[in-house]
Each structure stands twice: as structure tokens, then as C-alpha cells.
Length: 249
Ligand code: FPP
Image 1 (cartoon, helix red, strand yellow):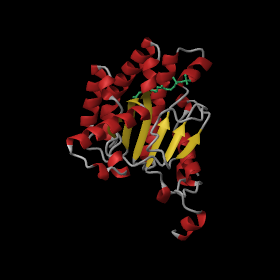
Image 2: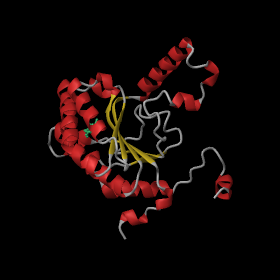
Image 3: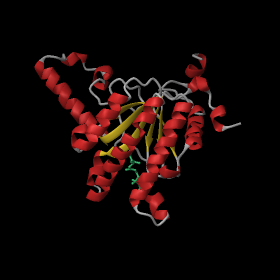
Image 4: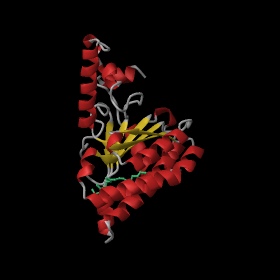
């Protein structure tokens, strides 16, 4: 029995978010440049998007470049931007054929013009996709997202567009870059660290966390399915008791 057959199709996570970590260490362990790890990381992205499609996952969010990553050496930042643009341009036709819809979250204004153009083109080309929505977090951090949302809410209150009394969780979520995307059910982090690194802090309020030592370039179809199976073994109580959850089933 292959791993995908062990997944309960009735209890799939609608949204899986992944902190792809370990590219640099994967490369170092092989005596290679960090860029080689990132290049191999793109192959892992391809495998995981295909696996998510096969398992009928609706949303897959990948932490591809954080606000803090801007502080990496200039050559590495440039290398990552170029790699992303190359991969996006190369894969757009395939993504479209497979019904994958691309979306981005993060501060797109900070990206170089050529990267924004390539992403916008890919988003336009794949807009009609009805399969997995692949959300790329680029120049993203939760603290940036939350403070930006707070500023925009304040401005709308001052303008009289948003009555102060209307600010509830739903209204607030509508000001985030993830607007319209369901919260992640499962957050995976590869590479052995066990932290959230400024990623989807609001949205992961009730996500199940899954940490693995596997470096991102080694992550693939079976590793994703193992994480989903692990998730399905958890009891999600959302603050309620086990008894309440059982009696509602
Ligand atoms: C983490 O490994 C990985 C990143 C910061 C970059 C991930 C980006 C890609 C794989 C390319 C993106 C491409 C597309 C198409 C979205 P690390 O460098 O932090 O590894 P380390 O912790 O071992 O040093």
C-alpha cells in the first residue's frame, strides 16, 4: 500500500503551509555552494506541488523569501530572485496545464521590477486554475503584515469608511495579505529547527505543527504524505474538550 492510500480523503487539511528550511545546510553537507541548495530546493517545490495536487490539497503556501531574508548577502538575494523568476517562467505552462493557480502574499513592492513582472504574468496565466492554489510568500513576515493591516484599518476608521465598532476578527482578516485564503490546518517546517520565524502568526492560531529534520531539498511526495498522515492522527479541539469533539461527530 503506497502512502497516499493511507490518507483519509474525508479529513484532508484544506491548507498546508510550509517553512522550507535547510537548503544551505544541504549544500554545505555536499561541499556545494548555498545556491546549489536553493536550486535543488526548486526541484523539491515541484515535487511537493505535484504531490499536493495528487492528494487534492486546496491551498499550499510556501515561505519562499522572508522580510528578514533581505539581510542575506547581496549575491544570495540576487541569486534567489533570479532563480525564482527562472523557475516561475519555466514552469508557468506546466502549472497552468495542471490547474495550479498562483497567488502571492507579502510586500511585492520590495521585489525588483523584473521579479514582479514575472510573478504578475504567472498569476494572470494561471488565474483560471481550479486545482491547488499555490501561495508564494515573498518578502513576507507576519509582523510586517499585521502592522500594515493595523495602519490601513486606522486610516479607514479616520476616513469614516470603517466604523470602529465593526473591527472584529473577520474584518481584521480582510486586511491581511491572506484575505480570502482559509487559515492553514497544517504547518510543516523542514530542516530541524522548531520555530515559526515570523510566518502566518495570526493565521496559524489553530494550525497543527509538524517539524522534520529533513532538509528541504530532500523533501518530497512521501514526506508530504507522512506529514498529512501525522496531522490526521491529531485531535483538533479548538479550545473544546475531547468529549465535546466526540459527541459532535
Ligand atoms: C531556506 O533555506 C530557504 C530559503 C530561504 C529560500 C527558499 C527558496 C527557494 C527554494 C526558491 C524559491 C523559488 C520559487 C519558485 C518560489 P536556508 O538557506 O535558510 O538553509 P539553511 O538554514 O540550511 O542555511
